[in-house]
Length: 340
Ligand SMILES: C[S@@+](CC[C@H](N)C(=O)[O-])C[C@H]1O[C@@H](n2cnc3c(N)ncnc32)[C@H](O)[C@@H]1O
Image 1 (tube, rainbow, N blue to C red):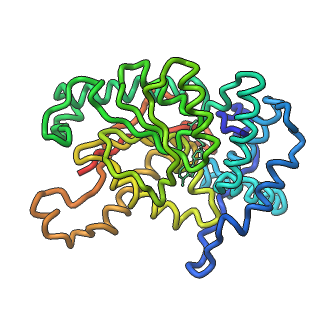
Image 2: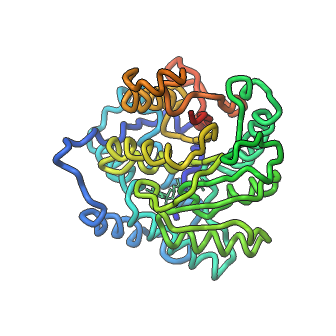
């Protein structure tokens, strides 16, 4: 699987472009229509069955960079052909056929060499997300700042204090390593889903090999989820990014919010880690979702004083920042939202 790494700092000087513009509603593109192109991009790549990790990381970083910091950097790009090529490569990461091919390669690599595959955004970000999420949960259950805005309660109505009783879902779990990192922090009710069967097979194999056979893995498309339970914590590391890179990304992002809202328990938390959106953009997207859902018109919500589905809670402050075009920002953001 080609992976998303934090590109080296000097890459920030390279021209990058926006993801493809929103399609007209009648122009929806199916994954099937594009699978041939996606497969040929993945399979005919020069990596072959023996992986050249450095090349793959560089290639993936280029593809993802095409969607990083869109607003600031699109103005900087002057090469139309290069922009179009980046758009095409970037949009591959929104296709299931791309991920199926990637995880087939990762699985072969796991069986041959025992490799775990990509850690998206790198080890440091994964560990930060796991420890930060643990602290957020402890803070919520101990009546800290976040809890002052909400009393965190379980589905049965009890205040949750013990991490092992927090149910956690990781959507688009990939190789499932984030769930292993959360298990090391003390969480034990852990479920990972991914629409790629190869990802789930890889995640299961790695969990068993590393002594985490209690983690549950299920093949499931977040946009058409078949899960029939809710979770107190829903994690997303790079999945909304990937969904947004589909040629119908803007529409699929709207579907994502509808779907994920049904998976987070009341007073539960959604933790999103993204490299394609800033914290401010994610907060704005949530506000748009709230407006679409309630728009101040829902009497029950207004009566309860909560005319929102998700509300911004907190974000990770410890990621390194870079300066670009006089603006300071980080390449990755992790933001938590509280479910009403
Ligand atoms: C950038 S990777 C991140 C993988 C993993 N979360 C991590 O951090 O290592 C995006 C993942 O989202 C999965 N994915 C994309 N769209 C999805 C969807 N609609 N439903 C479920 N999984 C999806 C892909 O198969 C892929 O595993």
